[in-house]
Image 1 (cartoon, one colour):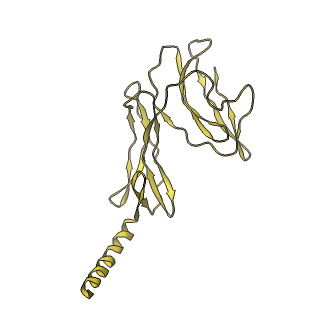
Image 2 (cartoon, helix red, strand yellow; image 1 turned 90 degrees about the vertical axis):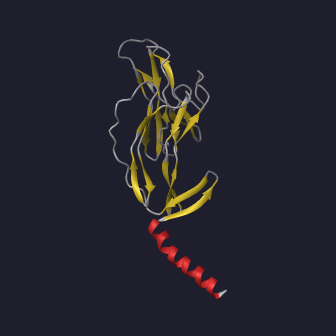
Image 3 (cartoon, helix red, strand yellow; image 1 turned 120 degrees about the vertical axis):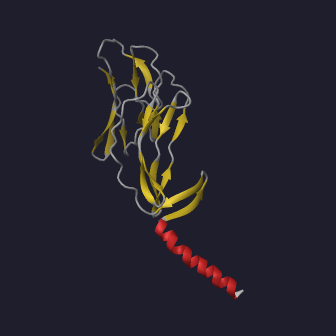
Length: 202
């Protein structure tokens, strides 16, 4: 019995420095094993985005990954969703306790856009004021245009007591002419709040 206790103690002591060196903890969540990195990930690199290889492709930005006990940069790439209408939810590092956890990027497939006002859309000239900063925009896979005079209107976050993503869609300028386009809406900070400025045709 004494020999067994001494052996187990020796194994525990020899493993401790490895765990400290690696700087990771292993936990379990519903999606499987969760690796908590003790060091904060480095600042994201600025990437030069090359020309798209063709219609339907979208850019997935690069990110830092923890591999072989060190940080490695995974370069961005173009990708095309397996199904039309896919929205790319970018991966991100999330603070978890005293460390950081990588949440893998994935596709979200929503029902096709139906004409009509988006959920929680303002009526008339009502000013929409949010009490908290909008989340980072989602990356959308832009489908083929239904015609040469159609424009893509990107999705955006809408505030209706909570943040709701309004999916992008194709639309046609009411008075189409060469050089026409859509001036995207935006959230601007005003004091401690955020105010929505509606997009418009130009």
